[in-house]
Image (cartoon, rainbow, N blue to C red; front, top):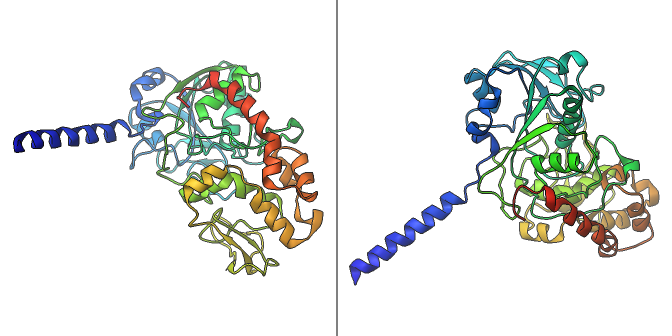
Length: 387
């Protein structure tokens, strides 16, 4: 009997160990057999940033360089190739110190797509960047612009896919294309629930982007219900998993007079304003590398601390306008509360109007619910992973 119990215990341990192994997400760049053979003997350009890690120690560019792949250039999105430039600041052309490969910025205020000579200098574009699944996060925009350019010049595109940490839900109004901008490129909800590979396929399939020769190297052991903890911060002010989950709601404050904690240790986990003095929590933004001139720099801001909010509650609430509405009501500034950026972020004109008219977060959210459901049906034919 004791021997049988021991056997059952061993079997159970093996099942648990096997399940844990099976659940480990493997990002696209790890599947080298799926794409490295396509690169040999070709001129390769890479659109990537600091998140494109092949392993804990090695970047995908360094791995391909080590493998003898002819990398003729690197394209850098917002925040730069090594991810150190603060949000919205122009990224300069450079040379990668480690490999000596030229870096061309796609976020310098001028370059939306490379020149004819640059486009003719490579055969294949490899894309590897960790997105966070939001319409106003700019990495996918850089990718789609490059797919457009590659379609014009006959360049192939290989997307090394990565999980979407906000890929388990879809929420928010669909972009009214009158508000198309550098923080909103295609008519999708605020939280679109797509990986970079999926959003590329959907953009081409729906005619939002030109059709290029695109191959997606899929993640393994991933679906849209997978809880994926990012191993590296995707940008300087999204430093924690908590901030990534709160970002769909708190980023809307970037279109208002309220600080989202830039210039503190907890950007996008807190928010406040100098005149919200009825709030007990406070913080003071100060210049730092990731935010050299943060809003309300040097002023004590009073507001809300969401660092300990249960993540399950954040997911359940989705895009939550109650934070913006509460701050709007408490500050009692009327239209002075908003900045033009608000419409670019939320993507429509009517949300601001409804906030001013006194509607609740739930009442406003109900008005985009049907559009979200229609979008979810539309996107299913482009999904590479189960919902």
